[in-house]
Image (cartoon, rainbow, N blue to C red):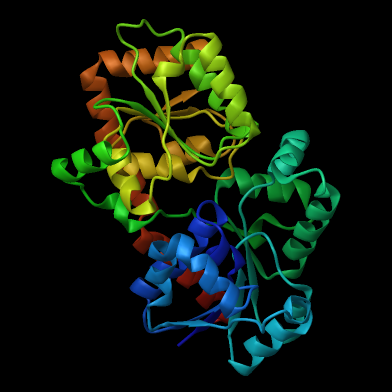
Length: 390
């Protein structure tokens, strides 16, 4: 039996991105390898975690209700003590065999445990688009510090898990680590996306959120890097008789106002639907009701919304940069994310050619079998065993 400890602050605090990755990874391991033990180490007390659970109970409870998971909460108001010493002491007293930092980080104190250490690196976005990264994170964030901490984690750990070949290449090019130290293990998505939603349920969800019968779809935070504006600009190039509404699901930002203002000046505002508060439980139905999924991000370490769309049986138009071709596969439409005409052309061709659309759906579903939870969990468990020489 192996006992794995996980850094878990984003598991409890983030609905998307790092949080979704953390929950899906731990849930997959507990389901496919129940004979082992899994210990979660959030960075907040039980009281604070309980408050946040009210916002995303449906996601986190899937993990916290599993008997195989132990949660080691830090004491209230002792976050600094926990970071410097407490987490290490808890791992030691619980006889944890291996520690896995799920979100680009390894606490310095963990090195004193003398157990194998792994860290998942999601992306090095800040190297490619430093100004956009500052806009996303806030000016107070020091990118040099971010780079230094990630570099230290990559050097100190025994194994680096990259979520794509693109991210692995960035790591090897940026830090003094051997390519052999970096293992690519793709992420999976919530098993709920693999389930076929009934037409009755899809209609119910569509009515609940006042969505049209036929629509294009975008999912993701509304930031400049995600490049939603290019999709809206592309809509202006599609003949009105063939134009479909664009349903946008994601956290609003200052960039949202830029997109909305542009749509209004071009008379596209009636074609732009920003859905409010769509629950995670309803997301598979919204995906499966979409005609085409659009994701023209400028840079991604992987691109989980692309995977969710393919699993849901939706044709994907996405960027031909960073890790997105890996996530999308050979039968998605890959475009220059700044090429508005290319985006519009892809939408028109897929909409007009039902045979093309059906082929993209069927081949996309075959491609994503490599990202199934069972496959990813097996790769992770094999890596843990290799690190422990068992």
